[in-house]
Length: 153
Image 1 (tube, rainbow, N blue to C red):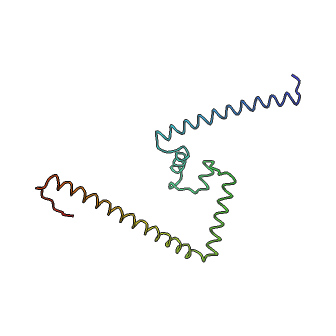
Image 2 (cartoon, rainbow, N blue to C red; image 1 turned 180 degrees about the horizontal axis):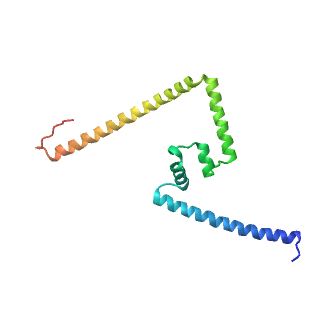
Image 3 (cartoon, helix red, strand yellow; image 1 turned 120 degrees about the vertical axis):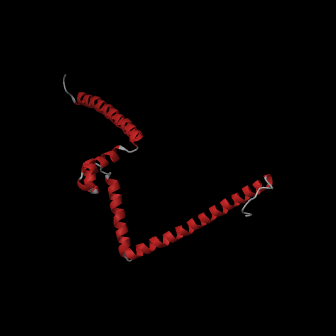
């Protein structure tokens, strides 16, 4: 067979489609195995590998960097840049805003607002439960007028 540019590109195209087909089969098999493991054990494969690594580590300790290296967990470049930018923005905000004290004050003030919302939710729950209790008690008294009931609420 005489190798021309056209023959080589045809061979490359054929090999490329064979390689892509094989890769798809591998990805599908890994996906099915991952689903089986998650169904049987309740954890994903990366979680299982992490637990295995931590079990083999001295004192069951490791750093995120070691885990990333052992498990080959590399985030896409764009995601790493975004997180680096966000960490830098938080650091700048802390420096400009007055440091950790300001951040603590902001967290507490946000928490107080959430606390108010929780109190309102608890109050409405108690009110609705009490209303339901009064209705049930009234129906019970109507059905059983001679029954002794401790509460007249």
